[in-house]
Amino acid sequence: MEEIKRIAAEIKEKQHKLANELRRYCREQKDLWKTVPYLALMADGRGGYSGRLGSACRSGYWPLGRCEWLGVAVDLLTGELVSYEDDAPLADDEQILSVAISEFDAQQVIDKLKREIERPDSAEAKKTRESRRTEYSITEIFTERKHPLHFTCD
Image (cartoon, rainbow, N blue to C red; front, side):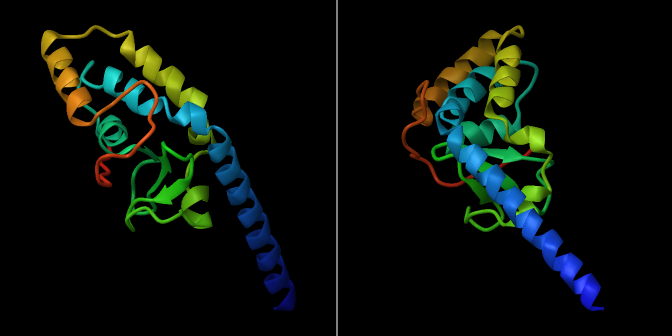
């Protein structure tokens, strides 16, 4: 019984270290994350509308994972990992480790958004996009959260 407790404690310690590394990694990408709301706005409406893109535009949060009950998102202003089912306190280790590691890569998110922006666009989507840009005060670099916390997942 003592052996299993020791192993469990070691695993928990390693999980905590990994979660902290992922937190650090996201914070270090803060400048990249700040470009996501604008790119999300430019991508939304090309082939449909996305709750994930809408969350980035409206509130400045990028939901990670499959948006299930262990919801974690990146605060696009700070790069912090937050929990979106509890009004955005910092995400705990379990929430963070429930997400695929590749989703913490801001450049990968940006590259995907840029590919989406290259898709055909409609006049209606352009009009909606311009309205949202004004309503949510979106600029190319996210500098200030002006709207309340709002998460919508795909």
